[in-house]
Amino acid sequence: MTNTSKNLFNVSRGTVIHGKWKKQTYLVERKIGQGATGTVYLVNGADGEAALKFSQPLSITSEINVLKAFAKVRGSSLGPSLLDADDWENGGSVYSFYVMEYIKGPTLTDFIKARGPSWIGVLLLQLLENLHALHEEGWVFGDLKPDNLIVSGPPFALRCVDVGGTTKIGRSVKEYTEFFDRGYWRAGSRKAEPSYDLFAAAMVAVNLVYPERFLRDGTGSRQLILKVKQKQELRAYAPVLVKALQGEYASAQEMREELLEALGAASHESRKPSSRPSHSVKNNGRTARRRQQKKEKQLFGLASVLGTAVLYVLYILTEVLM
Amino acid sequence: MKQGTIRQILLLTDGCSNNGEDPSAMAVLAREQGITVNVIGIIDEDASNQRGLHEIDQIALSGGGISQTVYATQLSHTVQMVTRQAMTQTLQGVVNEQLKKILHKETDLEALPPDTRGEVMEVVDELGETANLEVLILVDTSASMASKLPTVKEALLDLSLSLNARMGSNLFSLSIFPGKRKETEQLIDWTPTLESLPAVFSKLSPGGLTPTGPAIREAISKFKGKRHKKGWLPTDDEYIEKSV
Figure 1 (cartoon, chains in turn red, brown):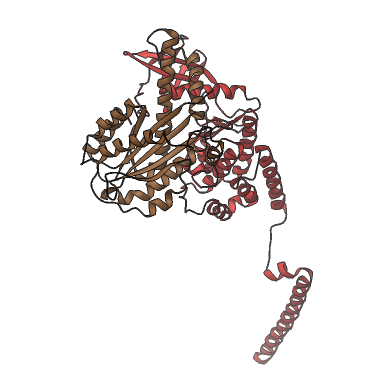
Figure 2 (tube, one colour):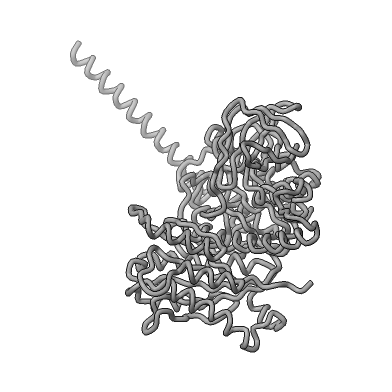
């Protein structure tokens, strides 16, 4: 590419970065991330640990705008808070950067791997709550995916480390990842609206049980619905995911309520005694049970007859031998 | 506010031109007329073609656009990103010009403090969302492209999906080179969506030389000719609604 996405940012440990405009200084600890849009370093500033991102001046400016918007969203802690934005003059070049809160924790993918799929539903609830607050402020998240989500804590909270895809409602989503993009699956437009995020949120759950992901086969959302139904781990709330994949939820709140209900019902069900004997019991209920009891009685009778017979034969044998 | 129109040629090719004018010269010609030329080079996973790659970069540089070389599998994402970035770049150029006029000195976006830059960027974003866009897609259908055409089709459908999610209106047109009888052949005239694309692509029979230069020259004339036509203006509401 002639003008973008070349990662020219390579700063070694111990480098001191001076802000040109606001005069803050940061000591580089180590690189913590590198993506298509820039490089992120762990740094030490006046207020302790922070994450510093270098990127192309123009994409970085958009991201800063988004982070500022996030700061205005009350009741949502999805994105990192913005601490500083400045330029660094070094060796005749100017590098734009911004500094944000350093969010510690495993990615959602690693977290689920370590703790098991029963966490998927619970964390999805949290995600939906955060998305709802964001949507209320007139934004959609856009590029939602497990690699971008960090589980901080305990107490566990879902946070997002890349807000580059965040878009004003009504505009078009510019940054996305194919697997989570409803446009890729031919399941809807790329217009920024709450249902776009809800589709992606459902796909986050899908990705967590299909870590290898899969390619589209041309059948649109039908393929996805089938994939959801094939996984035992998602069974409790599969209908909620299916509705989200078909764009049937108008708000994150609505999806969250139905998910909550499905999860509640699921845990209630698991508390019931889980022993499930033979088919006949399940199919015919009381009569079958009675029939079985009868059979048991017959068996008991037969056994006692046999037992007496054996004892009798032994008795005769001992009589004869003596 | 009356919206301007951004004009782009999007060239998809896999390598070297071997017929007619120098494509870079033709890209300069396009740029002189306010048309940006973006180039996407589609390469095979196993082969690397240095001359082809160099030419791809040169055309985009000359045409004031963006170039990127990708493997066929990454095409969809790239096509829409390149188009977007080129739009932003064009708009930034316009905004930078305005800034210079207002501030009466040689200054551009990068020279402003971050907060002011953010406000300017917001304007650029807004313009990118609402501007009208005309994209002439130019597809290389020489023999070596045969195996890549199904991916190209998917990528272009994807582009149409992305751009039609914008608020501004879009017009697409598709030409291929080489054509059956001429160097270039127009397959789809200016239209707000690319719905007819799959049908058109199924009839393609790749083969022949690669006259990239003449194809760009021909593409420029398609923009000119269109202005005389009736009914393409964005004020025609019915026409625009179809594109949403």
